[in-house]
Amino acid sequence: FVVARSVLPATRKSSVLAHPTVARVDRILASSPIYYGTLFRLAFLPAFVKNYGLALLNIRFRDYIVCCLIGSCFGVPAQAYLGSQLGDIYLGLRDAEDVAKSDPMLLWGGAAPALAMLVLMPTIAKVLLGSDEKDEKKS
Image 1 (cartoon, rainbow, N blue to C red):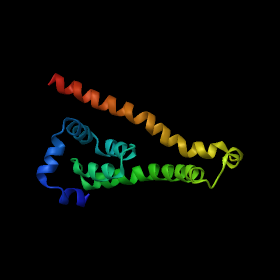
Image 2: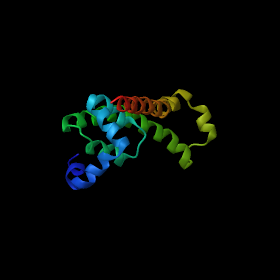
Image 3: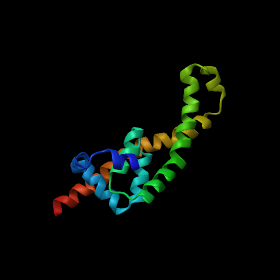
């Protein structure tokens, strides 16, 4: 948060915030910072976008930390578990027979949150950004 706010020059920050999509996200975030900030943290975005991008938006430090904590409580365990299950397969530490013998609910336990967010986030983003565009046209 401090790095994003102090390292990036003010002119660059204002140019980033002037982008139409970023400006809409910033306005949406202002309406409920913890809710939308947490959705932002749970989105499948690169880590630097989640960390520095959210900090560049108009969000208070307290709300930023709350979003990070809530996002970490759900996102990190699901990603770590899914990575541990799929990583063994990818690295060749487990073969098809071991995977077939294991309980499929273990893999689904890690994959379900990731798949749910993968399916839900584009829909949520379209609904939120689309409704914001309609509000702008009315103005």
